[in-house]
Length: 474
Image (cartoon, rainbow, N blue to C red; front, side, top):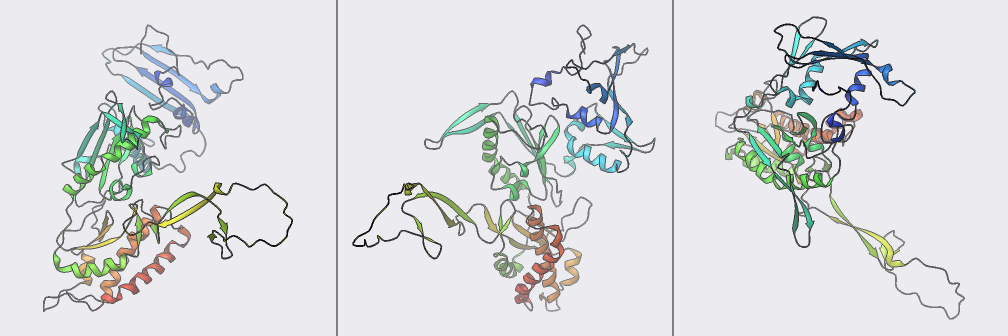
């Protein structure tokens, strides 16, 4: 605060900077949705204290003049070197806190503002009716990984000419993009990497519509990958802060990010540790043949067949009796007839859509699910330290042989071989179908209304196909 200049509320430099948090007034008016008054107390170290209050009625004015508030000025207490700003909400509306859970509120604050919580001197404490305090804390990435992936991007590129393979560079060294990722070993995080602007989470990488990546599921949606991409000063959010505006710089950013995916994948591979012996190779091969029927797009969607469509200009294209398209042979002219000329549409302007199957190595968007039995590693654990029976890594479902539930069903005989029984086949089929349905649900390909019924139906079908394994010995 500059005490030598007029202090005017709502005259922030952010007003003309669309890349910063704030500016739209949503924070202030969201406060009015639950209370009537918002009081501000702000102070610089060894400086004076300024207080003011504004209420919702302040903005219900019929004239066009700007709202005005009274600011009180007080001297600080002797030897008071504290500084900062305190915001107090009062006059709460009836029923506001009936459905408020402070545990949930704490998680939401930690989720959306972890970058801000990690800054020095910032602390958010929740206390309900002078009860136990809940301190909001930033996520501790160091607890899950000792070797994070870090990258600073100072230049973005965008295609100038596909024909000549030329690019347009954008110098962003004043506001470089910073990528920070961690891969948890033997842990399931379920905490996807996200974009952040000035410490505030905007959205997950997998939810960015402008990002045309074929690896959204296999890379950015991995079960044990987390972190953030700081795009402060580069990307601009929409007013709702749930997406980014389409700008020339955003096109360059997402184009450039695609180029670094291979480097990130190399990091993931260097940190990944799931292994197995050769003992289960034959069984895995048989199960993979069955799973080949489950084609999953890299964005996670299951599909029976994928096609590429092309729209072309047709010439003398007409519909035949069977409903297809054909080019008819010229009709024989009658000996005499009277023809009334009518205007005809230029037939070469007729649009025809041609669909070609995109399977068989021609479609980069989809691939079959794979299966693997890890008989050497300990089971991975989730965020609650519970051992996982299986995980999905890229498009491979990994089943842990050392999990106690697997051990209950799979016994080694006195002669040193394992035999696949109906019980173990049911166990494997259930784990496989659990991951298949999780993929479908994540991409909204199923409705919750028939979720359990469809799960059971598909499980029985898969189990019937896997009964050929019953009696197999390894």
